[in-house]
Length: 152
Image (cartoon, rainbow, N blue to C red):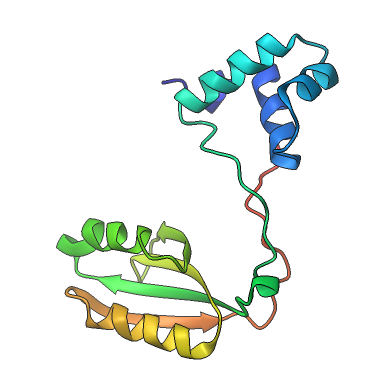
C-alpha cells in the first residue's frame, strides 16, 4: 500500500473536492479538474481499495439531533487490557473518536450524549470494566469547531 507521500496531485485534488462535498458526482469532479470521468472513477476506486478513502458521510449538527453533551473522557487502562478495551470502545454508539495518548492516561475518548444522565451511565459503565484504573471526564460547554477534515 502506498502512503500519502505517494499520492499525486490529482489524487489530492479529488480528495479535497470530496471532503468539501461528498455528494459531487464523478462527472462533476472530472469537469472541475479537466480530466475524464473514467480517470476520476478509477482514482476513487483505487483510493478506496487502499484505505485512503474510507467512506462518504454527511457532516451532522449533533445538537439538532438531540445530542447536547460532548464529553472528552481520559481513561487509564492496565496495559494488557488496552487493545481489548479500545476494541470495545469502537463498538459503542456514542463514541465518535478514540485516541491512544501519552502521559498519565492511555486513551482519550470523545463521545456525544443526549443528556448528562446518559454520560453518567456511560462513565460508570467504563469504570466497571476490568482493567480500567480511572477516568477523568470533561464536558464541553460550547463546541467552537468540530471538523475532522484537514485541508490538503
